[in-house]
Length: 153
Image (cartoon, rainbow, N blue to C red; front, side):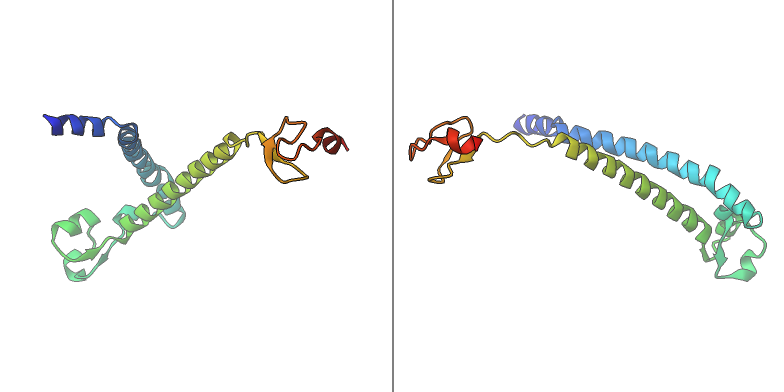
């Protein structure tokens, strides 16, 4: 029973739950980006390059067995193929995700610097004996120097 309670405590920690939420959102974001690349970005690029469908681009290591076939049909023949079109789509996916993550981290770093406002000093150094004293002190408790004269002029 102790191990079950320990596991429950571990699983319910804030950082574990945050990680699970982050992974779930990240997976959904990855699907959105893949759809963006496959369905929105690559078709116009393919059209500009002479009606090329990147998902069907492949290099057959056995051309006699796959001549004139689509990628799906070539895969059914069990011929050795290099699907470089799918690789290009995956590479574009990665670049878009990496750029989006860069933007998110950049914004988070900027927000973090705004949040890190330095706290006002609560101590200062006595100009006569170099003791650390409260900022509001008007006389040094160590050397009894009058600090009002040195602060104002």
